[in-house]
Length: 203
Image 1: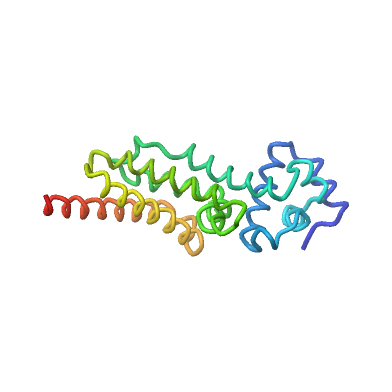
Image 2: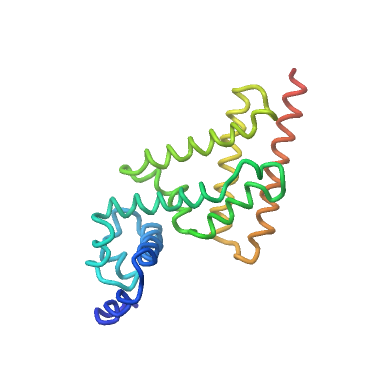
């Protein structure tokens, strides 16, 4: 149940500003994921966080700003976690992405699945997808020389990784994250090997 006004006031006094902002982002991600952008109000976010609506507005000037901050937070977690140097090892980038997703599971799913269906944020979500595909394209450069086939492959790898992780967040247990990351990594490796074999037969 939502916290009472008195309880919300007590809670708000105990939390430092950075921690409070992170709490609000997590609460907003959960609310937006559950209700969508139009179905979520700042009051809804406040109820999820157990604070007053006024406190939410102290950190975020509008619902639009809050939604975009949730997306930015998810992107930053991915950027901080992922390194191209991990591409050749197991669980590699798959493991890094699983770790990033587990840190902000609702925001991760919001970014990959839902934001592109929100008119005001579709461009942000699509831009992230392009950046992720370009990142994969660069990693695959020495493995798949043909630019067109490499582009296809990069897009498919990104879709496989992010959609798979979203499904795992829906249904899997955190205790299985490491095993799932290895499973995901091997799936990507298998696809790349198959694409390389196919390219060699056609040349």
